[in-house]
Amino acid sequence: MNDKFNVTYITFGGHVELNKYRFLYFAIMFTAYTLILCSNSTILCLIWIKKNLHEPMYIFIAGLLLNSVMFSTNIYPELLIDFLSDKQITTHSLCSFQAFIYYSLTGSEFFLLAAMAYDRYVSICKPLQYTTIMKKTTIIVLLGLAWLLPACQLVPSVVMSQSYKICSFTLNGIFCNNAISKLYCDTSRTTYIIYGVFILLNTVFLPLLFILFTYTKIFIICYRSCREVRKKAAQTCLPHLLVLVSFSGLCSYDIIVARLEMNLPKVARFILTLQVVLYHPLFNPIVYGLKMKEISKHLTKLFCEGKLNIWQSSC
Image (cartoon, rainbow, N blue to C red; front, side, top):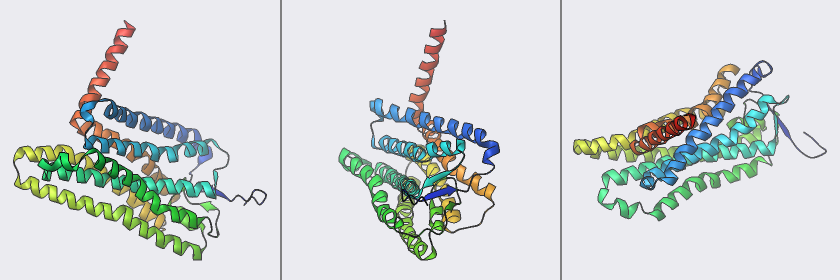
């Protein structure tokens, strides 16, 4: 606590042998952040530029990729600075803000996946009504709700956390997530956890149930339909399901370890935490770049043109 400026400082205590490996950590995370920005931004630009990609499914994919960029930008710059700093500290206000953005964008990911599931449901189960239902206004509303609903639900928790009494000033992690609840005294922590469970139900489990319901309906329709319909469903739904399974698995770490206070060795916690911020933001562009036929075709064309330009300039 800095009484002169009334600022409360939090120390990150989740780093492993930072003095020994700080430059290695920095190099790995800087490379990962660069790849995340480049890969996600490339597909985003393709969807923006190519008119044949101006369809609801690709617009939702663009929203998902943009969400990955914002999610990474919330964590990586602070993480990179900490790797090179003598002290890994932040203020309580900044920590609360980072946790707010972290969980807001995590909730948005599930809502965006739910919107994509709804889009696939209408496309496959109600093809004649698709253009009527999935019009421009519907897409804008779904995208707006995907980003606004989780954020609005989290605002009260940020406001409440500013009045909580802090009993510990060392956070068992490398960035601010659910572990921040362990900093508060027992009386404050109970309210924080109860409200956290409420948010978890609204922003994770309800969208997840909706996604499972829509894909169940899709699978039933596909089972009763011809081979062509099943092929189309597999091509468009499989990438979404892969992303959903991947993201749900990583989120389960946050719930089990951080929220339920499971004791893990420091090295294991550090590795799992890095996987949360490394794996998924890179997984999205790989899945959609390889599995979505139209995006893959444009990417191949883009790289071929780039190679041709390099070859011509070198001649």
